[in-house]
Image (cartoon, rainbow, N blue to C red; front, side, top):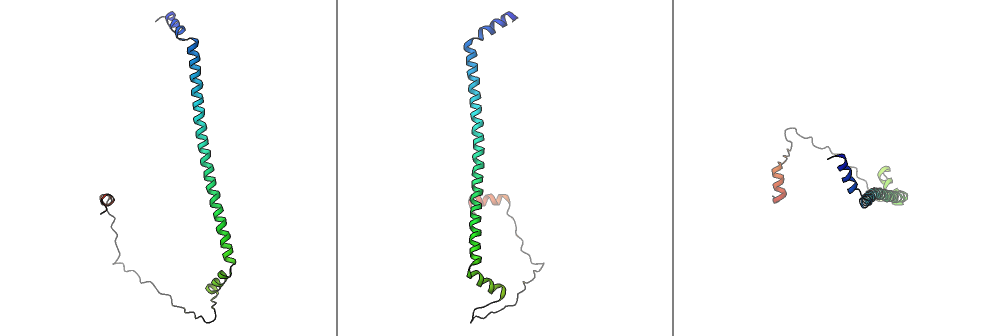
Length: 131
């Protein structure tokens, strides 16, 4: 193909309608691309907002728990229980029995329980057939 024929084909194909159509397609693609990016950014921001809301809810629950603990520590019931536990106080008519500490029997090295891990095939068999 010669340069004149090439120029003729380009001039024939390059009309005002084709240029307008190409510009419209380009603008549409840019609009769709911008919309997708905006949706992704909004999704990420919404995820951050949800995480922060969860952190706020957890902090509020912790605050409520600490407030309830503080009220419990100020109560007469806690004072009585802690006096009994740490100071050895008793109510009139109660008797305290102090038991000696027991020692756990030492394990004999010859008698140890050996746990056998089932094979992978046995685990799948249990999963599918319940046996």
